[in-house]
Image (cartoon, rainbow, N blue to C red; front, side, top):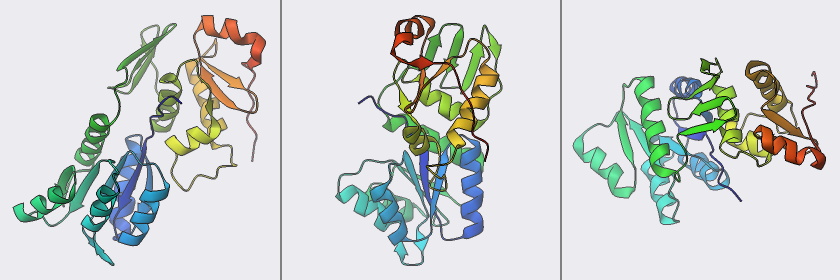
Length: 246
């Protein structure tokens, strides 16, 4: 199975207002964000979901956030962890690194720096992938998060880019709606809703004709070049697309 490129982050913070602020900042940078407010909840979510990075506060109601890091590393989980805390003494930083944290950011902090650090941890941890992808007259610059068609820069939302990025990095291969939900949305997304369909419809309008995204009825979507679309037309690939209105 080809590697997926998930964009899902777990933020562990017991201050509801700060947790929401961090979530908004990371979502604006293109990440899907789940929230946890205790060691117990964080350990459970990290065990059952696939996250690209964890952002963990230390002072939690039922223990130290480093307990989550320690438990993850004890079972061999290599997910990157950024410790986000007001404890900024050298001894505190060393304690975090000693149990397996990858980065440490002291409060107060700038959301832009946090998003940049999370992005850097994700790039460092993931398997190699292309930085530039060329499909017909489209150019995908994954490092700068830009898409051009015939040299013209297209304006995409963070969610639209996340969906298109996953499809483009698996060019010629079908990506199911479930995979898109898992990688590009957080736990609040309803699996049976039409959120994927709506974003794909928006992408189709912005990308223009001929459509880069092909629908595989009852399965999912695929990004393919002109040659692939021609070869597989007989296999049931179709450019017909409609959005259910709720």
